[in-house]
Length: 257
Image (cartoon, rainbow, N blue to C red):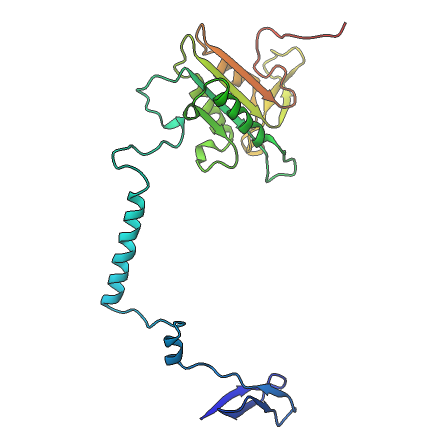
């Protein structure tokens, strides 16, 4: 029995006896190690190569895998319990809104050169404050960040506007609402001529370069104007130019004397 190989230096084809450990190339003088491949029978005995599955064996394997998958999925919870909701947006329209609810939005712009650090941490800290100190339930809080798996909770312009509508929808006397935003804020010329400084203040969704900013006039129309008497709204906006972001009638100023 002989072993065929190729010289490592000059690529000359060589033939060596099966018992040899090295062979010298007659053309270039290179000493080549003789690497012996294990036989298929030996490999199978050592458990390195499994014989191919065919016919009924393959069908049995498929049934076994499918059965394990079903058992695992069935053991994750009780069959009588309903599936958990992704977020408060999934609540049925027939249910009365919770008395305490919040929209928390943090935009990091991580794919852009003007990215912000800490905005998502801000949102998570606010969520902890609301749930652990002020009695808000987690299921009644919408968190919008770029890290959310639910595409409805990515802080795009459309998603933020939709969540703000959810916040005030069906609000009644005694409700406590919170809107928190951490991200970039800008301003643009006031084309309605209702601003004393001649500018509308804005917040910047993650897609504002494509879809545009959300201006203070729209924020007022969405979460301030619809409020019923006796409803409390706390809006905390951590952004530049956010002093009059709600377009309120009155502004409280503290001036040093």
